[in-house]
Image (cartoon, rainbow, N blue to C red; front, side, top):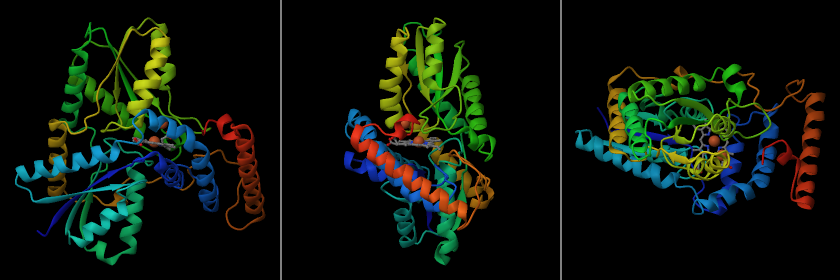
Length: 387
Ligand SMILES: C=CC1=C(C)c2cc3[nH]c(cc4nc(cc5[nH]c(cc1n2)c(C)c5CCC(=O)O)C(CCC(=O)O)=C4C)c(C)c3C=C
Ligand SMILES: [Fe+2]
Ligand SMILES: [Fe+2]
């Protein structure tokens, strides 16, 4: 067996406020996040949305200390995983590849080549699979593999999702128990699972297993927890004018509060590190929603970060993947080609008259949006919810 490596995949987040706009540009340039009728529109629209969304997004990053903690936490997870694997007798190098910000996936792949890695486990730090997260990174890696004969010499395997791993379920259960046990009435608290949302079209048209995996994951955690508490699952962080998975976290919190729920323990379920959507969205925005609606105790279960039980479960996943039959990019779920995750109208592909018309319309919409935003500080993208 040659040199062995692990590539941890994650989304990435802006390290500073100056990074916010280019980070958003990278995110909205990804057709797995917003797919437009023509690839030609991707870059101009990504530029437009990132430019107009940057201010609001920067304000949110400012509230959590001026940047995302994602890089620091993911690098700490990688270091802890390396130590755990070494302790268990496995000489393995661990790399971090982010999708939209530093350290980028292509930099990690360049290092993997330089280190002459022969066997590689590709492990996304998303417990549940979505075509918008793990799937997007797998597609990016697949393109790199197709283009590079040197990479094709590496024996790789991917772990598409691992929410059912006993060590992960144990980690989540312990973290929930610790939070509940600090509350005035541990058995009365409502356990509120908040998952990152995706547009409904991902699940219903593109075949994304994300919703199913989230629901299974919540069921497995509640079974293992074996406590009498009531629980709810809702989806947070929707972006843009299309329908996202429901119920929405803010509306569900209000509904429960109006039913008389006084204690909430919120569990972020689709991500394993603290980030803007736990530290700002849940801890600040949803806390305010809850308190205004009459919730008296609002507790938040921490993300696993470098919890030792969690790191052991990652190490176990790596060892298991090295033993099992390899899983290739082509074995993972990919979006149906007709995925629509942006409002669409009748369309014909190619340099057709309809393409001309739509390019012209988008250019005009973009121009008007910028002018309105510049003049009024409020553009049409606010109205449709993209900003
Ligand atoms: C499992 C987790 C995630 C899914 C699914 C997901 C889908 C998804 N996200 C957007 C748009 C945005 N996401 C943003 C930040 C962000 N998203 C995730 C995770 C998932 N996204 C994380 C961990 C982060 C933040 C990282 C950090 O900086 O701490 C942002 C930028 C922040 C903001 O301006 O609100 C956007 C925009 C879409 C459209 C989508 C599915 C299609
Ligand atoms: Fe996101
Ligand atoms: Fe968000």
